Image (cartoon, rainbow, N blue to C red; front, top):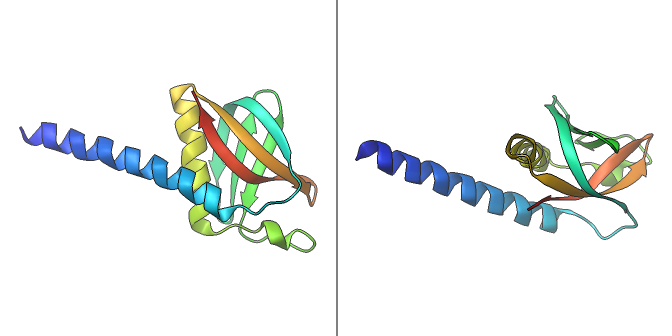
Length: 119
């Protein structure tokens, strides 16, 4: 009985976490001209001291950073948002789902604006 309760709590936590990630991504992004990468398959995700990096099998790499330099400072993200996007990308990679990412090219890199998991 105790294992059943623990599993239910774990599933509930995952569901709440994913909903929070989607809501945070929608609220934390600004309306700017951005490009969309469409439906992409994640091949690798990396979380570093001040960045999250998501690499796709066909479309290159996209990043979310906390300390971009000028003229890209408007794309600096909070540490919590970088971790949330990292978790979302890792979830998609491990479950075999595809991601939709909107990004803006700035500072020699593709800065993530919006990310969501596709079915």
